[in-house]
Structures are given as C-alpha cells and as structure tokens.
Length: 189
Image 1 (cartoon, rainbow, N blue to C red):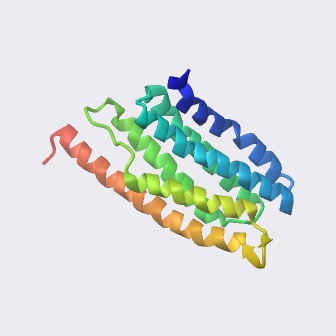
Image 2: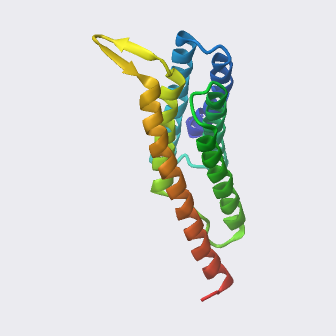
Image 3: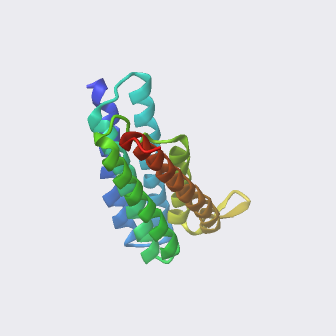
C-alpha cells in the first residue's frame, strides 16, 4: 500500500480538478478563495508524490507517466477557466499550453531512443511558478488580512509573467536537448 502512495497522490491531484472548475463557474469572493485553497492542496501533492517516490524508492513507470499528465491537467484546466473569467490573458495561456504539448511530443519521440529527455530542474522550477501564479489568480480578489489589504490578482499577474518566461526558457532548453539527442542518435556530426 505504501508503495502506491505517490500514485494515489497523483490521482488525487487529478480528482481535485473538477471541484476547482465547478467552483470557478460561480466566481465570487468565497468560491474563488475555496478554489484557490483546493488548487494549493492539489499543487502540494506534486511535491509530496515526488518526494515520497524518490526518498523511499517508490518510483514506478506508471507514476513517471501519470505525474506530468496530472500537472498538465491541473494547470491547463485552471488557466482555461481563468481566461473565461478574464483573470489572465488568453495569449499567455496559449503559449503555456503550446509549450506543454510541444515538450510532451518531444519526450514521446525520444522514448524509443537509448536516452530520453528527462525533466530538467528548469522545468520543475517552471511548474512551481505556474502553481504559485495560479493560486492568487484563482483567489483574484483583494483580501484584508489583519491591517493589510492584499491584491491577489496583482500578485498572480506578476507571478504568471515569471512563470511564462520560465515556461518558454525551459521549452527552448528541451528543444536544444532534443536536437543534441537527435544528433547523437542519428550519428550526425
């Protein structure tokens, strides 16, 4: 049972997507705050499933396959809902989703090769910033915490531009590594 805990966390991340989407169909201060909290919990499962898998050697081919899919489902679902609510520009989401599809295609191509494109630290940082941007974008409203009023939308917009830069940079990194792998695999000098 313990061996499968990382996979259960990954599946749990995917099962938290529908409640987030449903709550965002009713965009108000409280439903947005609840959706942001659920998204935060879902994004934390990404950290914990990886930690458990590596630390206790519970890694599996199923987990390596499912984890990036769960991340993409969570991120793209939230971003698409945020477009419909006018909380994030569509062009940013289009670039993020295009990068995700392109990198997934590159990784699929290299599966049959002797070496494959492994997730890079830059790609992991990109994911962290995407999660960090989406939480305040979902929360959206200004909330008063003690004597301080916090504009969550503004924080989210700053973070989404950082996430976008990291998304494009890590995508370029994948394409460069793909090109190098292709040259080695095909014996091109």
